[in-house]
Image (cartoon, rainbow, N blue to C red; front, side, top):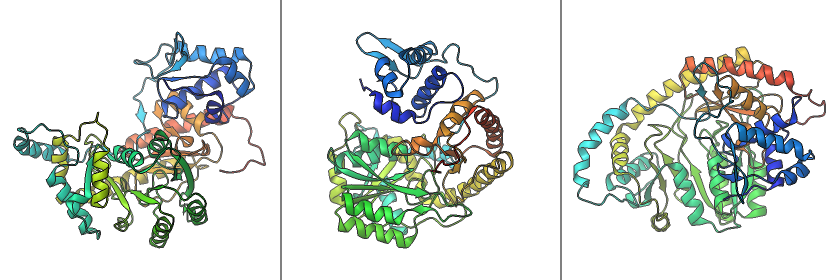
Length: 471
């Protein structure tokens, strides 16, 4: 059972205090850490006395906060294991829920493309020729690997089928790469803010994250990857692995310029870093063109989740053939391969994927613009980014209230992920990620509710210090 130390929990909590009762504020912030994934369900919380000392609180306050979490179903007492936090199986008693429909903005994703249903029917017709086999596929069906190789080649990166490995989605691909290409204690270059599950994968294998700042593009700032930090990170730490999302970055929406891409590749070669680029959102262009691939010595990760549907658990890795063989050998013995039927659906989709992407671009423009307009009208104090593609806005709130806002929003039936979930060290309390995968009407309703939650949070938050530093 994983155990959380008092110092680690204190770091994750950040500035959790507000003007209300301390016990309730502490309980709400611990619950938020669980709900947005910063604490894993089933984790043992620190002892009351230890947490009280770390937070400079009375033990009675911490005990009361744990008791509140216990009463609402988020903490259980296990003999010999103390207090364990976990997601309740059902809505906990006493947890107030709104009468209206809840809106989930914690996932940056779209509903299935209309073509997925017809493609699934066609894939079922392809299935009989595989039924005589055992169905456990660790490298990918030949037709899917061929289609993926053709697509990379058409984009300017000559690729053979044996240079493609099919995985159980992009997250599985990133985890496999971290496990196969690093050893415990290795430095791994990551982005901050960045894709939280990639950071989870690095930490799960004992990697030591080296964060490089990525800023959103705004009306007054070009944003993007801080070049000085990139240069310094490579030279100082010589990372074994580097993970970047250079095309419509999650969560900022930034696109890495061509000159900077070339420089990053030069740095990786100089310092012996295996560079991984995650292209999960790369095809989701709205205003501009789809960014080109990196050179052949860079490992590319892709997925069908954002373009076709998250229910198709198909991702892939494009690398040299020797690396592909090494990765296939390192696949976990308990996963037993990638679903055949899902692979057949994606193989059918790839020849006409550009037509699907054109429709997706129109959908995303309407949804993004609806969200920008509604936030601009209802919450004019928030600073909005310029987002040419991708699935989310990285919004600057102006005040370090992201986590309290996420808690308050749930009372209005809106689920959002607080900014610190995307940082290496719990920063970004002044930011909130707002995905625009939902339809425009749902997004407008979500912003209306967020405006109410923001009013509540601002009304109870301490006045900001005139010397506060914007981060």
